[in-house]
Length: 88
Image (cartoon, rainbow, N blue to C red):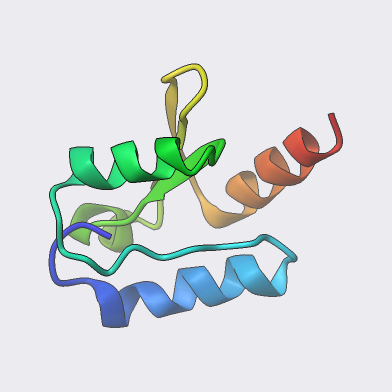
Protein backbone atom coordinates (compact mmCIF):
# COMPACT_ATOMS: atom_id res chain seq x y z
CA UNK A 1 0.00 0.00 0.00
CA UNK A 2 1.25 3.44 -0.90
CA UNK A 3 0.20 6.40 1.21
CA UNK A 4 -2.75 6.54 3.58
CA UNK A 5 -5.01 4.14 1.69
CA UNK A 6 -5.32 1.18 4.06
CA UNK A 7 -9.02 1.70 4.78
CA UNK A 8 -9.96 2.26 1.14
CA UNK A 9 -7.85 -0.70 -0.02
CA UNK A 10 -9.84 -3.19 2.05
CA UNK A 11 -12.51 -3.50 -0.66
CA UNK A 12 -10.27 -4.56 -3.57
CA UNK A 13 -8.26 -6.80 -1.23
CA UNK A 14 -11.46 -8.48 -0.03
CA UNK A 15 -12.61 -9.00 -3.62
CA UNK A 16 -9.35 -10.73 -4.52
CA UNK A 17 -9.56 -12.96 -1.46
CA UNK A 18 -13.18 -13.86 -2.27
CA UNK A 19 -11.95 -14.89 -5.73
CA UNK A 20 -9.50 -17.31 -4.11
CA UNK A 21 -6.36 -15.19 -4.38
CA UNK A 22 -4.00 -15.24 -1.39
CA UNK A 23 -3.22 -11.65 -0.43
CA UNK A 24 -0.60 -10.44 2.06
CA UNK A 25 -0.68 -6.75 2.94
CA UNK A 26 2.30 -4.62 3.94
CA UNK A 27 1.07 -1.97 6.36
CA UNK A 28 4.56 -0.90 7.41
CA UNK A 29 4.40 2.51 5.71
CA UNK A 30 7.87 1.94 4.25
CA UNK A 31 8.84 3.19 0.82
CA UNK A 32 7.54 1.16 -2.10
CA UNK A 33 11.02 -0.02 -3.08
CA UNK A 34 11.61 -1.40 0.40
CA UNK A 35 8.24 -3.18 0.35
CA UNK A 36 9.06 -4.75 -3.03
CA UNK A 37 12.48 -5.90 -1.77
CA UNK A 38 10.80 -7.61 1.18
CA UNK A 39 8.28 -9.32 -1.11
CA UNK A 40 11.11 -10.50 -3.35
CA UNK A 41 13.08 -11.86 -0.38
CA UNK A 42 9.96 -13.82 0.61
CA UNK A 43 10.00 -15.36 -2.88
CA UNK A 44 6.64 -13.88 -3.80
CA UNK A 45 5.99 -13.89 -7.52
CA UNK A 46 3.69 -10.87 -7.77
CA UNK A 47 3.18 -7.58 -5.96
CA UNK A 48 -0.04 -5.60 -6.25
CA UNK A 49 0.51 -1.89 -5.86
CA UNK A 50 -2.43 0.05 -4.45
CA UNK A 51 -2.18 3.81 -4.04
CA UNK A 52 -4.55 6.75 -4.23
CA UNK A 53 -4.34 6.96 -8.04
CA UNK A 54 -5.09 3.25 -8.42
CA UNK A 55 -8.09 3.46 -6.09
CA UNK A 56 -9.49 6.40 -8.08
CA UNK A 57 -9.20 4.66 -11.45
CA UNK A 58 -9.89 1.07 -10.38
CA UNK A 59 -6.74 0.02 -12.26
CA UNK A 60 -4.02 -1.45 -10.06
CA UNK A 61 -0.36 -2.12 -10.80
CA UNK A 62 0.54 -5.80 -10.84
CA UNK A 63 4.30 -6.28 -10.78
CA UNK A 64 5.90 -9.59 -11.68
CA UNK A 65 8.84 -9.78 -9.31
CA UNK A 66 10.60 -12.45 -11.40
CA UNK A 67 10.59 -10.52 -14.67
CA UNK A 68 10.23 -6.96 -13.39
CA UNK A 69 7.33 -6.29 -15.74
CA UNK A 70 4.43 -4.21 -14.53
CA UNK A 71 0.88 -4.06 -15.88
CA UNK A 72 -2.02 -1.82 -14.99
CA UNK A 73 -5.15 -3.99 -14.66
CA UNK A 74 -8.58 -4.00 -13.11
CA UNK A 75 -9.46 -6.58 -10.43
CA UNK A 76 -11.05 -8.99 -12.89
CA UNK A 77 -7.91 -8.98 -15.06
CA UNK A 78 -5.68 -9.37 -12.00
CA UNK A 79 -7.70 -12.36 -10.80
CA UNK A 80 -7.47 -14.00 -14.24
CA UNK A 81 -3.74 -13.31 -14.54
CA UNK A 82 -2.96 -14.76 -11.12
CA UNK A 83 -5.19 -17.81 -11.56
CA UNK A 84 -3.69 -18.48 -15.01
CA UNK A 85 -0.18 -18.21 -13.56
CA UNK A 86 -1.07 -20.58 -10.74
CA UNK A 87 -2.07 -23.19 -13.32
CA UNK A 88 1.41 -23.20 -14.91
